Image (cartoon, rainbow, N blue to C red; front, side, top):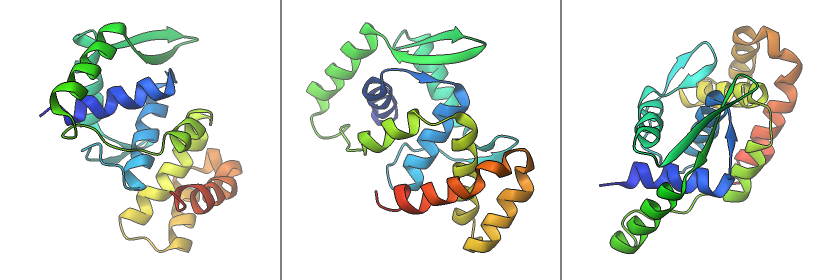
Length: 167
């Protein structure tokens, strides 16, 4: 029943702080692409894959006082609140294995250290592969969609191949 909320709270708790709405979207998308289910549906938008469901869930967690949303240098930052930790703990105690899930926290931490622009390129490439593009076509289409970030494309594809596919 509370699996979506629990998973988001667990992710934010594990990462400590996520700097940027775009970064949060991309981390969750890439974790989903790697097999961790956050129950989000994605569409392609200007900054790559975007889930309105995910943003609504984040907004709800903030409205309930479970997530803190602050501004740093004109960037939204997210962290779990004490109230959120208590709620997460209660869900763990009540539901036992129903809400718990394993996600590659080391991998998520690594993504959290990357720039949101880099994750935008990786996430766009992964999204194109998910929608049926072949590898070389996904590369070319990512380059076409993100010409301002083409300097990150080779590194992003390498990251995808050697980090995401290993998870």
